[in-house]
Amino acid sequence: MTTNEVIEMFNKYVIANYNRLPKVIESGRGSYIYDTDGNKILDMFPGWAVSGIGHCHPKVVKAIQKQAKILLHMDNTFYTELQGRLAQMLGERAFGGKSFFCNSGAEANEAALKLARIHTPKGKYKYITALGSFHGRTFGAMTATAQPKKFESFQPVVPGFVYVPFNDVDTLKKAFDDEVAAVMIEPIQGEGGINVATPEYMKAIRQLCDKNQAMMILDEVQTGMGRTGKWFGYQHYDVVPDIITLAKALGGGVAIGAMMAKPEIAASLTPGTHASTFGGNCIACAAGVAVIEAIEEENLLQNAVKIGQYAVDKLNKLKSKHSIIDHIRGKGLMIGIQLKSPGAEIVSNCLKNGLRVNCTQDTVLRFMPAMNVTAKQIDEAVKILDNVLSEMKK
Ligand SMILES: *Cc1c(COP(=O)(O)O)cnc(C)c1O
Image (cartoon, rainbow, N blue to C red; front, side, top):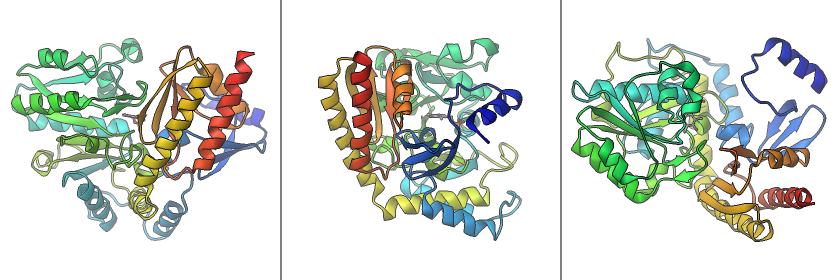
Protein backbone atom coordinates (compact mmCIF):
# COMPACT_ATOMS: atom_id res chain seq x y z
CA MET A 1 0.00 0.00 0.00
CA THR A 2 1.12 3.56 -0.59
CA THR A 3 1.64 6.01 2.25
CA ASN A 4 -1.57 7.81 1.39
CA GLU A 5 -3.60 4.60 1.27
CA VAL A 6 -2.39 3.60 4.72
CA ILE A 7 -3.18 7.04 6.12
CA GLU A 8 -6.67 6.88 4.57
CA MET A 9 -7.21 3.49 6.18
CA PHE A 10 -6.22 4.98 9.54
CA ASN A 11 -8.53 7.93 9.05
CA LYS A 12 -11.40 5.55 8.46
CA TYR A 13 -10.73 2.83 11.04
CA VAL A 14 -8.20 3.88 13.69
CA ILE A 15 -9.21 6.25 16.48
CA ALA A 16 -7.38 9.52 15.96
CA ASN A 17 -6.09 9.98 19.51
CA TYR A 18 -2.49 10.55 18.39
CA ASN A 19 -0.81 13.27 16.38
CA ARG A 20 1.01 11.11 13.88
CA LEU A 21 3.84 12.20 11.61
CA PRO A 22 2.93 11.57 7.94
CA LYS A 23 5.14 8.56 7.36
CA VAL A 24 4.43 4.83 7.28
CA ILE A 25 7.22 2.88 8.94
CA GLU A 26 7.88 -0.56 7.59
CA SER A 27 10.93 -1.87 9.40
CA GLY A 28 13.64 -1.00 11.87
CA ARG A 29 17.16 -2.15 12.65
CA GLY A 30 19.34 -0.74 15.41
CA SER A 31 19.18 3.05 15.29
CA TYR A 32 17.46 3.24 11.91
CA ILE A 33 13.86 2.96 10.76
CA TYR A 34 12.70 2.64 7.17
CA ASP A 35 9.51 4.05 5.68
CA THR A 36 7.45 2.69 2.80
CA ASP A 37 8.79 5.38 0.47
CA GLY A 38 12.28 3.95 0.83
CA ASN A 39 13.64 6.57 3.22
CA LYS A 40 16.13 5.63 5.93
CA ILE A 41 15.65 7.61 9.12
CA LEU A 42 18.13 7.92 11.97
CA ASP A 43 16.08 7.31 15.11
CA MET A 44 17.12 9.31 18.18
CA PHE A 45 13.88 8.41 19.96
CA PRO A 46 13.38 4.73 19.19
CA GLY A 47 9.90 3.56 20.08
CA TRP A 48 9.48 6.37 22.61
CA ALA A 49 12.32 4.77 24.63
CA VAL A 50 10.89 1.26 24.24
CA SER A 51 13.53 0.08 21.80
CA GLY A 52 16.25 0.91 24.33
CA ILE A 53 18.80 -1.39 22.73
CA GLY A 54 17.73 -0.50 19.19
CA HIS A 55 15.07 -1.81 16.86
CA CYS A 56 14.93 -5.59 16.41
CA HIS A 57 18.00 -6.37 18.50
CA PRO A 58 19.13 -9.79 17.17
CA LYS A 59 19.35 -11.29 20.63
CA VAL A 60 15.78 -10.29 21.48
CA VAL A 61 14.50 -11.46 18.11
CA LYS A 62 16.19 -14.83 18.57
CA ALA A 63 14.90 -15.27 22.10
CA ILE A 64 11.29 -14.63 21.18
CA GLN A 65 11.50 -16.78 18.05
CA LYS A 66 12.84 -19.64 20.13
CA GLN A 67 10.20 -19.22 22.83
CA ALA A 68 7.38 -18.89 20.28
CA LYS A 69 7.83 -22.53 19.30
CA ILE A 70 7.74 -23.73 22.91
CA LEU A 71 4.99 -21.78 24.68
CA LEU A 72 3.54 -18.37 23.85
CA HIS A 73 1.55 -17.75 27.00
CA MET A 74 0.85 -19.47 30.27
CA ASP A 75 -1.53 -18.04 32.82
CA ASN A 76 -0.51 -17.41 36.40
CA THR A 77 -2.33 -20.50 37.64
CA PHE A 78 1.05 -22.20 37.14
CA TYR A 79 4.74 -21.41 37.43
CA THR A 80 7.00 -20.77 34.47
CA GLU A 81 10.78 -20.71 34.65
CA LEU A 82 11.14 -17.61 32.47
CA GLN A 83 9.00 -15.38 34.69
CA GLY A 84 11.02 -16.45 37.70
CA ARG A 85 14.29 -15.93 35.84
CA LEU A 86 13.40 -12.40 34.78
CA ALA A 87 12.28 -11.52 38.32
CA GLN A 88 15.57 -12.88 39.66
CA MET A 89 17.60 -10.85 37.17
CA LEU A 90 15.72 -7.69 38.13
CA GLY A 91 15.93 -8.37 41.87
CA GLU A 92 19.68 -8.96 41.64
CA ARG A 93 20.05 -5.53 40.06
CA ALA A 94 17.65 -3.59 42.31
CA PHE A 95 17.60 -3.91 46.10
CA GLY A 96 16.72 -7.61 46.13
CA GLY A 97 13.23 -6.61 45.06
CA LYS A 98 10.42 -8.96 44.14
CA SER A 99 8.51 -8.38 40.91
CA PHE A 100 4.90 -8.31 39.78
CA PHE A 101 4.58 -8.39 36.00
CA CYS A 102 2.03 -6.56 33.87
CA ASN A 103 1.98 -5.10 30.38
CA SER A 104 2.62 -1.37 30.51
CA GLY A 105 3.94 1.53 32.53
CA ALA A 106 0.51 2.71 33.60
CA GLU A 107 -0.35 -0.75 34.90
CA ALA A 108 2.92 -0.98 36.81
CA ASN A 109 2.07 2.33 38.46
CA GLU A 110 -1.46 1.19 39.30
CA ALA A 111 0.05 -1.84 41.00
CA ALA A 112 2.41 0.39 42.98
CA LEU A 113 -0.41 2.69 44.07
CA LYS A 114 -2.49 -0.27 45.23
CA LEU A 115 0.42 -1.85 47.06
CA ALA A 116 1.14 1.40 48.90
CA ARG A 117 -2.43 1.57 50.17
CA ILE A 118 -2.67 -2.06 51.18
CA HIS A 119 0.72 -2.10 52.89
CA THR A 120 0.59 1.13 54.90
CA PRO A 121 -1.47 1.50 58.10
CA LYS A 122 -5.22 1.95 57.83
CA GLY A 123 -6.34 5.51 57.14
CA LYS A 124 -3.38 6.29 54.93
CA TYR A 125 -4.69 6.93 51.45
CA LYS A 126 -3.03 10.03 50.00
CA TYR A 127 -0.44 10.10 47.27
CA ILE A 128 1.98 12.96 46.72
CA THR A 129 3.21 13.41 43.14
CA ALA A 130 5.20 16.16 41.44
CA LEU A 131 4.05 18.83 39.00
CA GLY A 132 5.17 18.05 35.46
CA SER A 133 5.20 14.31 36.11
CA PHE A 134 3.92 11.65 33.76
CA HIS A 135 2.71 8.30 35.06
CA GLY A 136 0.34 6.97 32.38
CA ARG A 137 -3.23 7.23 31.12
CA THR A 138 -5.35 4.86 33.22
CA PHE A 139 -7.46 6.60 35.86
CA GLY A 140 -5.06 6.20 38.77
CA ALA A 141 -1.92 6.86 36.74
CA MET A 142 -3.61 9.77 34.98
CA THR A 143 -4.56 11.34 38.29
CA ALA A 144 -1.02 10.77 39.54
CA THR A 145 0.16 12.69 36.47
CA ALA A 146 0.30 16.20 37.87
CA GLN A 147 -0.48 17.99 34.60
CA PRO A 148 -4.11 19.09 35.03
CA LYS A 149 -4.63 19.62 31.28
CA LYS A 150 -4.25 15.86 30.87
CA PHE A 151 -7.22 15.06 33.12
CA GLU A 152 -9.51 18.07 33.33
CA SER A 153 -11.95 16.56 30.78
CA PHE A 154 -12.24 13.39 32.84
CA GLN A 155 -13.38 14.73 36.19
CA PRO A 156 -14.08 13.43 38.72
CA VAL A 157 -10.68 11.77 38.92
CA VAL A 158 -9.33 9.46 41.63
CA PRO A 159 -9.42 11.11 45.06
CA GLY A 160 -6.38 11.34 47.31
CA PHE A 161 -3.75 12.94 45.09
CA VAL A 162 -1.73 15.93 46.25
CA TYR A 163 0.60 17.76 43.84
CA VAL A 164 3.81 19.52 44.78
CA PRO A 165 6.46 21.33 42.71
CA PHE A 166 9.30 19.02 41.62
CA ASN A 167 12.60 19.36 43.52
CA ASP A 168 11.03 21.57 46.21
CA VAL A 169 11.81 20.11 49.65
CA ASP A 170 9.93 22.68 51.74
CA THR A 171 6.60 22.26 49.95
CA LEU A 172 6.99 18.50 50.15
CA LYS A 173 7.44 18.71 53.92
CA LYS A 174 4.32 20.86 54.25
CA ALA A 175 2.30 18.44 52.10
CA PHE A 176 2.99 15.52 54.43
CA ASP A 177 0.45 14.41 57.02
CA ASP A 178 -0.67 11.17 58.71
CA GLU A 179 -2.82 10.25 55.73
CA VAL A 180 -0.02 10.06 53.14
CA ALA A 181 0.48 6.51 51.87
CA ALA A 182 3.14 7.24 49.26
CA VAL A 183 5.24 9.73 47.38
CA MET A 184 5.69 8.86 43.72
CA ILE A 185 8.15 10.66 41.43
CA GLU A 186 10.34 10.00 38.42
CA PRO A 187 14.10 10.23 39.17
CA ILE A 188 14.27 12.19 35.92
CA GLN A 189 10.98 13.56 34.60
CA GLY A 190 10.76 12.38 31.00
CA GLU A 191 7.60 13.84 29.44
CA GLY A 192 8.03 16.76 31.84
CA GLY A 193 11.14 17.80 29.92
CA ILE A 194 14.18 15.88 31.30
CA ASN A 195 14.12 17.38 34.80
CA VAL A 196 16.66 15.64 37.00
CA ALA A 197 15.81 15.15 40.70
CA THR A 198 18.38 16.71 43.04
CA PRO A 199 20.15 14.52 45.62
CA GLU A 200 18.63 16.67 48.41
CA TYR A 201 15.13 16.08 47.08
CA MET A 202 15.60 12.31 46.87
CA LYS A 203 17.02 12.22 50.36
CA ALA A 204 14.16 14.33 51.74
CA ILE A 205 11.58 12.01 50.18
CA ARG A 206 13.29 9.02 51.74
CA GLN A 207 13.45 10.63 55.18
CA LEU A 208 9.87 11.93 55.11
CA CYS A 209 8.54 8.55 53.98
CA ASP A 210 10.45 6.78 56.75
CA LYS A 211 9.22 9.22 59.35
CA ASN A 212 5.59 8.94 58.24
CA GLN A 213 5.39 5.22 57.41
CA ALA A 214 4.80 6.06 53.76
CA MET A 215 6.12 4.34 50.64
CA MET A 216 8.73 5.90 48.37
CA ILE A 217 7.73 4.93 44.84
CA LEU A 218 9.98 5.74 41.91
CA ASP A 219 8.49 5.60 38.45
CA GLU A 220 11.44 4.26 36.46
CA VAL A 221 9.41 3.47 33.36
CA GLN A 222 11.61 5.81 31.33
CA THR A 223 14.79 5.97 33.45
CA GLY A 224 14.97 2.21 34.05
CA MET A 225 16.94 -0.44 32.16
CA GLY A 226 20.19 1.43 31.81
CA ARG A 227 19.52 4.54 29.76
CA THR A 228 20.99 6.86 32.41
CA GLY A 229 24.19 4.82 32.67
CA LYS A 230 23.01 2.76 35.65
CA TRP A 231 20.40 0.02 35.64
CA PHE A 232 17.94 2.25 37.47
CA GLY A 233 17.82 6.00 37.95
CA TYR A 234 17.74 5.78 41.75
CA GLN A 235 21.23 4.24 41.67
CA HIS A 236 22.66 7.68 40.95
CA TYR A 237 21.51 8.68 44.44
CA ASP A 238 22.29 7.63 47.95
CA VAL A 239 18.75 6.32 48.54
CA VAL A 240 16.87 3.06 48.12
CA PRO A 241 13.18 3.37 47.22
CA ASP A 242 10.50 0.97 48.49
CA ILE A 243 8.92 0.38 45.10
CA ILE A 244 10.00 0.99 41.51
CA THR A 245 8.01 0.61 38.32
CA LEU A 246 9.37 -0.43 34.94
CA ALA A 247 8.09 -0.86 31.38
CA LYS A 248 9.24 0.74 28.11
CA ALA A 249 12.75 -0.66 27.44
CA LEU A 250 12.28 -3.74 29.64
CA GLY A 251 11.00 -5.88 26.76
CA GLY A 252 13.16 -4.42 23.99
CA GLY A 253 10.02 -3.82 21.90
CA VAL A 254 7.67 -6.38 23.43
CA ALA A 255 4.94 -5.11 25.78
CA ILE A 256 5.85 -5.72 29.41
CA GLY A 257 5.68 -3.80 32.68
CA ALA A 258 6.91 -4.63 36.14
CA MET A 259 6.47 -3.36 39.65
CA MET A 260 9.30 -4.20 42.03
CA ALA A 261 9.05 -3.89 45.78
CA LYS A 262 11.18 -4.71 48.78
CA PRO A 263 10.27 -8.28 49.83
CA GLU A 264 8.66 -7.29 53.15
CA ILE A 265 6.45 -4.79 51.34
CA ALA A 266 5.73 -7.08 48.40
CA ALA A 267 4.34 -9.59 50.91
CA SER A 268 1.21 -7.45 51.29
CA LEU A 269 0.12 -8.24 47.74
CA THR A 270 -1.54 -11.54 48.62
CA PRO A 271 -3.70 -13.70 46.31
CA GLY A 272 -6.88 -11.89 45.34
CA THR A 273 -5.52 -8.37 45.84
CA HIS A 274 -4.09 -7.82 42.38
CA ALA A 275 -3.57 -9.63 39.07
CA SER A 276 -2.97 -9.32 35.34
CA THR A 277 -3.99 -11.98 32.82
CA PHE A 278 -1.12 -11.31 30.45
CA GLY A 279 1.34 -10.44 33.23
CA GLY A 280 4.56 -12.44 33.00
CA ASN A 281 3.69 -13.73 29.53
CA CYS A 282 6.34 -16.17 28.19
CA ILE A 283 7.27 -14.12 25.10
CA ALA A 284 7.53 -10.90 27.11
CA CYS A 285 9.71 -12.53 29.77
CA ALA A 286 11.95 -14.16 27.15
CA ALA A 287 12.44 -10.70 25.65
CA GLY A 288 13.17 -9.16 29.07
CA VAL A 289 15.83 -11.74 29.86
CA ALA A 290 17.45 -11.19 26.45
CA VAL A 291 17.46 -7.40 26.96
CA ILE A 292 19.29 -7.67 30.28
CA GLU A 293 21.80 -10.14 28.85
CA ALA A 294 22.44 -7.94 25.82
CA ILE A 295 23.01 -4.86 27.96
CA GLU A 296 25.63 -6.75 29.96
CA GLU A 297 27.31 -8.59 27.12
CA GLU A 298 27.65 -5.41 25.08
CA ASN A 299 28.62 -3.12 28.00
CA LEU A 300 25.75 -0.83 27.19
CA LEU A 301 25.64 0.86 30.60
CA GLN A 302 29.17 2.09 29.98
CA ASN A 303 28.23 3.02 26.43
CA ALA A 304 25.30 5.10 27.69
CA VAL A 305 27.69 7.09 29.89
CA LYS A 306 30.40 7.47 27.25
CA ILE A 307 28.23 8.26 24.23
CA GLY A 308 25.89 10.31 26.41
CA GLN A 309 28.78 12.58 27.36
CA TYR A 310 29.95 12.67 23.75
CA ALA A 311 26.48 13.74 22.61
CA VAL A 312 26.20 16.42 25.31
CA ASP A 313 29.60 17.86 24.32
CA LYS A 314 28.57 17.97 20.69
CA LEU A 315 25.23 19.55 21.49
CA ASN A 316 26.93 22.15 23.67
CA LYS A 317 29.04 23.12 20.66
CA LEU A 318 25.84 23.50 18.70
CA LYS A 319 24.54 25.79 21.43
CA SER A 320 27.34 28.28 20.87
CA LYS A 321 26.33 28.42 17.22
CA HIS A 322 22.53 28.57 17.53
CA SER A 323 21.05 31.03 19.99
CA ILE A 324 17.70 29.18 20.03
CA ILE A 325 19.38 26.58 22.28
CA ASP A 326 19.29 27.65 25.91
CA HIS A 327 21.06 24.71 27.53
CA ILE A 328 21.50 20.92 27.51
CA ARG A 329 20.56 18.72 30.47
CA GLY A 330 20.09 15.07 31.40
CA LYS A 331 21.97 11.94 32.36
CA GLY A 332 23.56 9.32 30.13
CA LEU A 333 21.45 8.90 27.02
CA MET A 334 18.45 10.75 28.41
CA ILE A 335 19.17 14.17 26.98
CA GLY A 336 17.04 17.31 26.81
CA ILE A 337 17.83 20.34 24.68
CA GLN A 338 16.07 23.33 26.24
CA LEU A 339 15.05 25.73 23.51
CA LYS A 340 14.09 29.38 23.90
CA SER A 341 11.07 28.91 21.59
CA PRO A 342 8.81 26.03 20.45
CA GLY A 343 10.46 23.07 18.72
CA ALA A 344 7.65 21.45 16.71
CA GLU A 345 8.92 22.86 13.43
CA ILE A 346 12.46 21.66 14.19
CA VAL A 347 11.12 18.14 14.72
CA SER A 348 9.31 18.08 11.38
CA ASN A 349 12.26 19.63 9.52
CA CYS A 350 14.63 17.07 11.06
CA LEU A 351 12.34 14.29 9.91
CA LYS A 352 12.33 15.67 6.37
CA ASN A 353 16.13 15.41 6.54
CA GLY A 354 16.18 11.86 7.86
CA LEU A 355 16.38 12.40 11.62
CA ARG A 356 13.82 11.54 14.24
CA VAL A 357 13.88 13.51 17.48
CA ASN A 358 11.08 14.32 19.91
CA CYS A 359 9.86 17.54 21.44
CA THR A 360 8.11 17.67 24.80
CA GLN A 361 6.62 20.53 26.83
CA ASP A 362 6.75 22.62 23.61
CA THR A 363 10.36 23.71 24.05
CA VAL A 364 12.44 20.65 25.02
CA LEU A 365 13.95 18.52 22.26
CA ARG A 366 14.59 15.00 23.48
CA PHE A 367 17.47 12.79 22.37
CA MET A 368 16.98 9.31 23.78
CA PRO A 369 18.83 7.09 21.31
CA ALA A 370 19.36 3.35 21.61
CA MET A 371 22.00 2.45 24.20
CA ASN A 372 24.16 0.90 21.48
CA VAL A 373 24.17 4.10 19.40
CA THR A 374 27.60 4.93 17.97
CA ALA A 375 29.57 8.18 18.05
CA LYS A 376 29.25 8.28 14.29
CA GLN A 377 25.47 8.15 14.50
CA ILE A 378 25.53 10.98 17.06
CA ASP A 379 27.70 12.98 14.63
CA GLU A 380 25.17 12.32 11.89
CA ALA A 381 22.24 13.39 14.11
CA VAL A 382 23.93 16.56 15.34
CA LYS A 383 24.90 17.49 11.79
CA ILE A 384 21.31 17.19 10.57
CA LEU A 385 20.07 19.25 13.52
CA ASP A 386 22.80 21.82 12.85
CA ASN A 387 21.74 22.13 9.20
CA VAL A 388 18.06 22.35 10.10
CA LEU A 389 18.71 25.13 12.62
CA SER A 390 20.87 27.04 10.13
CA GLU A 391 18.24 26.67 7.41
CA MET A 392 15.48 27.93 9.74
CA LYS A 393 17.45 31.09 10.56
CA LYS A 394 17.34 32.18 6.92
C1 LIG B 1 5.66 6.17 29.28
C2 LIG B 1 5.59 6.37 30.74
C3 LIG B 1 4.54 5.84 31.51
C4 LIG B 1 3.35 5.15 30.90
O1 LIG B 1 3.67 3.96 30.28
P1 LIG B 1 2.59 3.21 29.34
O2 LIG B 1 3.29 1.95 28.97
O3 LIG B 1 2.31 4.12 28.19
O4 LIG B 1 1.39 2.98 30.17
C5 LIG B 1 4.59 6.00 32.87
N1 LIG B 1 5.61 6.65 33.47
C6 LIG B 1 6.64 7.17 32.76
C7 LIG B 1 7.75 7.85 33.48
C8 LIG B 1 6.66 7.06 31.38
O5 LIG B 1 7.66 7.61 30.68
